[in-house]
Amino acid sequence: MTTYKIIRFNRDAENEEIETGLTLEEAQEHCQQEDTHGEGWFDGYVVDEEDDEEDDEQPGTMADYVAAHGITVEVLENRGIQRDKDNWEHQSFKLRLINNEGRTINTSWRQGMGITKDPADMADEVFDSLISDANSYREASGFEDWAEGLGYDIDSRKAHRIWQKLRRMEPKVIEFVGGNDEFEHIAYNIERL
Image (cartoon, rainbow, N blue to C red; front, side, top):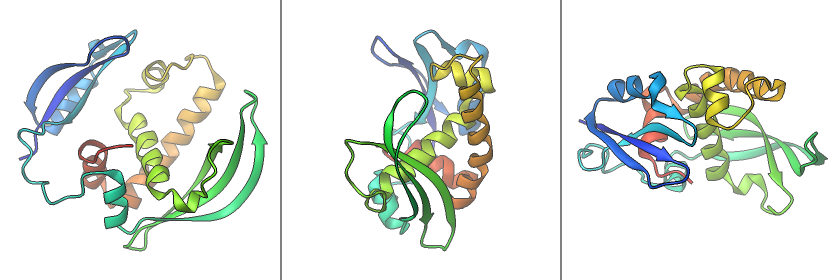
């Protein structure tokens, strides 16, 4: 049986192992408590590698997972170079990810001017970004928790628009990967970029 451990992630100090041997539900319940985050720290959970034997045959890195599941990226639209309201100059794209089971998901993708790779050649990065975004939504107890955890002002309209976009995107990501169990496997067992 896969078990999980609670890690206290600290911005300015070493991370601490808080508790081990938890079920997924116990770990999630712990992390949703009000006293599990603060200024410069938060509690998160990861697979307890010492107890995890059933996933040994599964791909270990995001690149392995993407290759094993035939995830590819198709550029639907190259929107060219853009500059956002924060004056960040970037390349903007509309992408479609496709997996070996024929499921698809469309997403916007922005990359800084220093990145010269075609997004079609960056399937692991694009997929990892979708998982990270969806998981940030899932782990937050609400908008304020999410915003504070990522350093946004809770009164920011921009942050609220991002939160709403994540709320709409999260179920699509889960459907793309084949359900909640697979999503959690990817988010907590696969080595992230």
